[in-house]
Length: 72
Image (tube, rainbow, N blue to C red):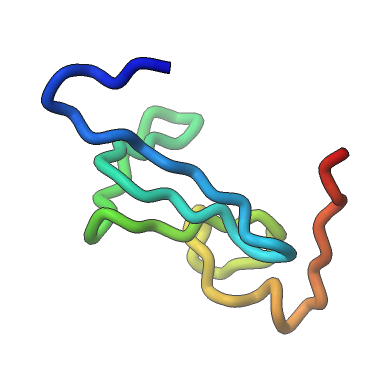
């Protein structure tokens, strides 16, 4: 996959039994078209569904014992 000239790559990392870690310049938009203003270049996005700060992670996956299905 080629990068656009002058634009750094965006990297999405699946944290084991945790959130999605997104690094790079992103534009985050919800299903109604509302935009979020992410602070900084690294964001943690909720994957467990229990965060009080959705779409951002607040650590609820630890409190709820979230475990992710293993990718094959």
